[in-house]
Length: 74
Image: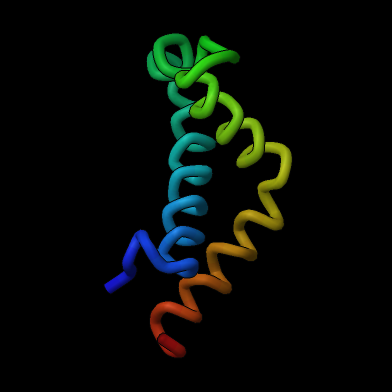
């Protein structure tokens, strides 16, 4: 199991958070509710969604690499 307190667990959490926020940006109701704030604690969701959209290829490759690592090497 991935542990959040280890470095690889933290990377898995960060990648899943970025991918989830990028997906939620495509949902109209959630976009207006969750991703409307660009500052403060709610701005973290907005910034993660922007990272997921602008860097979609590196994020996708990181997800595949991390999945391979967790499934086969760990």
